[in-house]
Length: 307
Image (tube, rainbow, N blue to C red; front, side, top):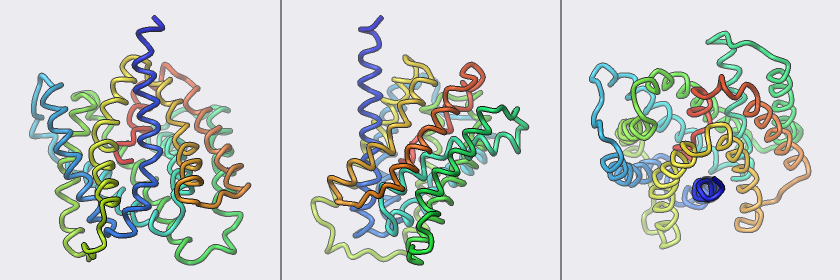
């Protein structure tokens, strides 16, 4: 049994590292390539790789034409709008801060479920929400007075990304009853990529500044973050279960923070560390509560196809 779980565990560890480092790649690349142009390049490459994976894995190809509107809308919100917020935000704030803010997505999704689906509010959920907001305060609010207007805008954009992902999660939920995860992400990525084109057209990028390092990071984001890591995540989840893989995802902000400190030389304050620990703890509480009832919802709320 242990031998059977070794490969899924390795796959999940690789996934966490790849997605954790994605924030650094965005930070480096968006300094040269305009945010939506970067998103278009990334997901164009990702679409090609996902097409290969999809054609190889899926026995049932295509989708019901009646589901085109929901695929298009969820792709627009989960890819186009999400990355409008995230890429622009990371150009203004530290990659480490962005990753910690993104970590609260399960908490915001929980709040949305309580409001929209009337999910039962338990003591553990209440504690999770309170602790997460305290953590966010330590990351953002406690230094708000000394934060520049540009950084403040970046934080707001990052929370816009969180809200976009929550909306995406709710819209996508009905699709999980009809299609596999790889099929859902594949078609959403195709639609999301198409919707990125008009945004990118109106941006300006100085292509003379594009170096081999930038090209490497774009390829990394497209091939590994938006395609291969997602396949590894599905593979790990099918063998380890949703609860275990969700807990692994709590490592993402920690990986980003440590990598940002050593690679990008970003400063890490005590408040950020405290806030990050509180946010991760809050998400841990959510992910370990009511495991049997969260099989459907936790799949989509924690996925970083967009990371």
